[in-house]
Amino acid sequence: MSVFETTLLVITALAGFSIVWSTLTLGISPMPSSKKARQAMLQLSEETSLGLGVDTTVQTQIGAIFELGSGWGSLLIPLAKMYPQRQVVGYELSFVPWLTSVLLIKMLGLKNVKVNRQNFLDADLSSAAVIFCYLFPAGMSALEKNLQSENRALEYLVSNNFSLSLYKPIKTIQLTDLYQSPVYLYKFK
Image (cartoon, rainbow, N blue to C red; front, side):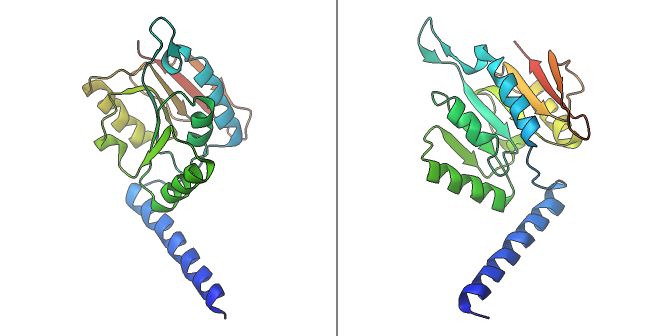
């Protein structure tokens, strides 16, 4: 086996171990949203023009776009491209997906996006105008508690597959995938 092959094998094994470790530690694997779910989430982002647009009366930005559990950057990067005038902030704890998204962002030269390797529950979410997430039931419950306690500018939340229990969505898109997955849009203001 050549040095290159050995190095590639070691890197692959370490990446695999990192993903397994973070899956066991966090209780969920870094699963990207499906293409249909991303399209639905991007469609719903257009319906949140109040939260994502520029206030034309004063020509100032209204708040940031956050993605909680931004994973491999498959939604974060399209959001950053779609809204270049907005600050886009991702949170991801799993090392390999975080590193992948950071490298992709640098390669694409996106200046309006930042990915934090941090638990979003420990982060200051108060500047988020719109939050996107594809979490899991316990993550949604924890987020919901965080939203209740935090003084925030949040206007909208778009969630793939998992709903909030205390809030009613203003719109739900039922995907035409195998599981008939829902994508929810919540309005807070």
